[in-house]
Amino acid sequence: MTRKIIHVDMDSFYASIEERDRPEIQGCPIAVGGSPDSRGVIATANYEARRYGVRSAISSARAVQLCPHLILIRADFDKYKTESQKIRGIFSEYTELIEPLSLDEAFLDVTDCTQCYSSATMIAFEIRGRIHKDTGLTASAGVAPNKFLAKIASDWNKPDGQKVIPPEDVDQFVRILPIEKIFGVGKVTAAKMKDLNLHTCGDLAKWSIEELLKHFGKWGGELFYLCRGIDERPVSPHREPKSLSVEYTYDEDLPDLESCIDRLPTLYTELLQRLEVDSQLRNKIRGLFVKVKFNDFQTTTLARTRYTSPSLDTYRELLVQAYARGERPVRLLGLGVRLISELDLEGLAVQLELFPESLIHEWKNWLASGT
Ligand code: DCP
Ligand code: MG
Image (cartoon, rainbow, N blue to C red; front, side):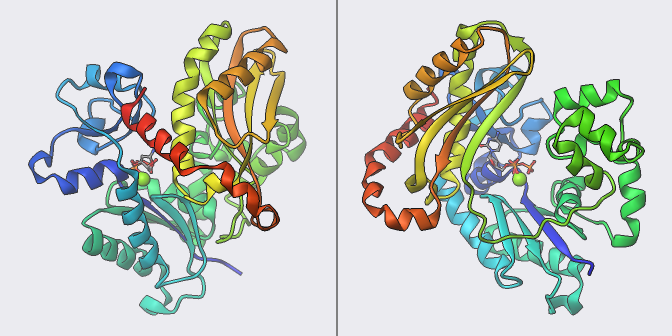
């Protein structure tokens, strides 16, 4: 049966909240992030600041270079969580099938919704209107028969827009869809695909599953379906991740251990931000890991279980050991935490003590100071 999936994604979420709360800076270029003096990074920027090239994950120092009159504001996660909860409250008036991906985005399965004459397009429109009325913020939405297409569609008419991909338009839509739109295709993979003369999903669809598997490993199997616009993954409200990690493939290989260590703080900040998304996650950490992919694609993961506080020092120690296994230039670095499932947690309630409140404050201060 054809499903109706909506992907809602707030526009420049943190920055829009700060702009809303400070009428005096409305219309100015605004970014939320750490301090430029101490290796801080940008979490996000409003659309005015983006015109200068200020984007998520660039260093705050670079952002100020690009836009000298940028207004840089420290993140206030409690405030963002409050807004996120309001938005989720609105979603839940339409469906129970909500899968949040972060504070500012979620998938909704509205196949069985009877509101708005069962029109998913109208439901998306109404939800965006409700969000604006209740929070003063704008959201964009994508409506499609599956998660893959709905997520691409929500980005199509951003900000404050929506796009619908009806089932009958799927073939035509994916045929000319650039490969960069596929989740997981970053700069490096895109360059590799282009070398193979693969530019659109239509190009990918000409390859056999064997060829895809040969060039892209296991992921090739997923690509076979995605490039045809097929994605059967359900919207699952109770997804329980087993781990949470951030990783980055560098445009140029990192030549030595020192340059790897230099990259740690940025990855670490992002990992902490991801952990902030769900307050339950902190209680579920039962180990830390570092992933290193060397320039010959050999990958090594070094984990330390029983560690429940993700400190930068521990990650540095792990990185030193992981690097020693290859001692070659590095193309990818990743940092992560292993999580315990809800069920395991019940049996190990005692261990909750392992994650003291004081540490959480330490993180927040650390984040705010941007060091
Ligand atoms: N975020 C972050 N670090 C990143 C990316 C995002 O801290 N590297 C935070 C800040 C964003 C929020 O997550 O406000 C949502 O991320 P999005 O990618 O949806 O970005 P925005 O909502 O800011 O902008 P857009 O309008 O492009 O969705
Ligand atoms: Mg967003």
